[in-house]
Length: 271
Length: 307
Image (spheres, rainbow over the protein chains, first blue to last red):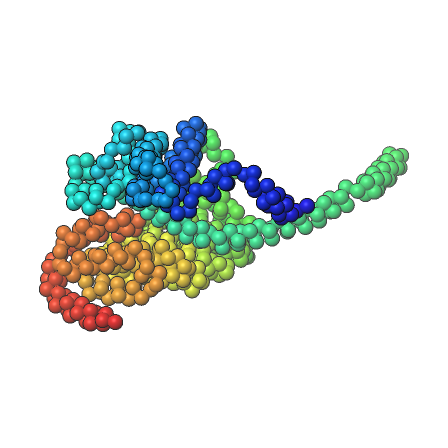
């Protein structure tokens, strides 16, 4: 059967045995009018997942995944931190059907949750300092640690945040000197490249000049080659004809006849 | 003594010459010269004389060999012999003969239906004559260049252009040099050799400036900037900078432009030498004369730019 069939059957079964699902019932009991409780449970669940991810990051070997997980953790921590004030606001609200103790316990719950959020390890040094704005620009130096933290609204509004501190001046200078050195290097490379370019262009033009010459050579050599072949063949034929055994035998026979005639004449004359 | 020992029948160039002469001189017993048999003797004699460093005799032998080949209706070989004779005449310093020989060689090549070697022969003749008869050399270069252009083989002409330009500069005929450079640029354009073209164009501007002919230089630059290939090249930018420095009448600026540009290093060395000596003469007067004109032109441009 197909997946859709399986899904519908599972849904039907779940519906049938709903009353045995304790978790669900417990959730449903939580009144929808209690905003605090809802938000609290949601945040709690988030904190749990974030903690899980942080633990995973601690045991993971692959640095890239570690970095990614840490980033996730940090992100969710920041989001959770932003939710805390909302929870604080909801805490003192009166809700029907809740005892006095519970009401008093709520702010404590909020604080406990906030502490829990802070304590989630995010792979950097714990105890985040609220460092100045300039730090986020520094290159990763071995002595300096990268501190990425969320800046609260009051900090942003403080005017001193944007002035040059000692550190940031130093960084600026560092950046300038490195840039100057890079420019120097790039200039040298540019010079070398321009020389190369000129040489390459000259070589290109020279090659263009040689191409028709080589084509001419090619055709002339082809012609000479063909001539040579035909000449060779004809020469072979001629030589074969000269050396053919028939001619040779004829030569020998004629020679014998001449010698015979000469001998006969000699004999005749001797007499 | 050693000479006589090693000299046997085959290696005696004088003997070879005598044999050749015998075969060609007309007398009672001989009514026609037998060039077919005489020419190899002459050729051998010429080689042997060259090895023995008897230049005068070698030259003569080459001449005779060339005559022989001509009679045998092979102008190509005759041309080759004439060129060798010309080179030997150059060593002897007989400039008129050099010119004659190379011209004859070139004619023979044309006869054999090969115009390119003819032009090359003229070019070689020009180079041989540079020290002795520079004017004659120039003429030969011009003839060579003409033949190349006629035969649409401008690519082979580049070397000739170069020698001609350097000769002109040596003779301090700067306008001629610049004209030759522009002609070179034209040939390069036909063969689509843009790099050479740009280099020659800049060279022409520099030569004009060296000859203290600022107006010509400016005109030249204006004409050349019509050419697309040149207009987009870095050589054009360099020329513009140079001319601007000239217009301001600032010699320091001129020197600075020449020194700081990478373009100069890739030009011909004789042009580099000229460029390093810029600015020649007093260019401050150019500042006043062209200052007013420059401003008016600049204002005109600005008005037009109000698009």
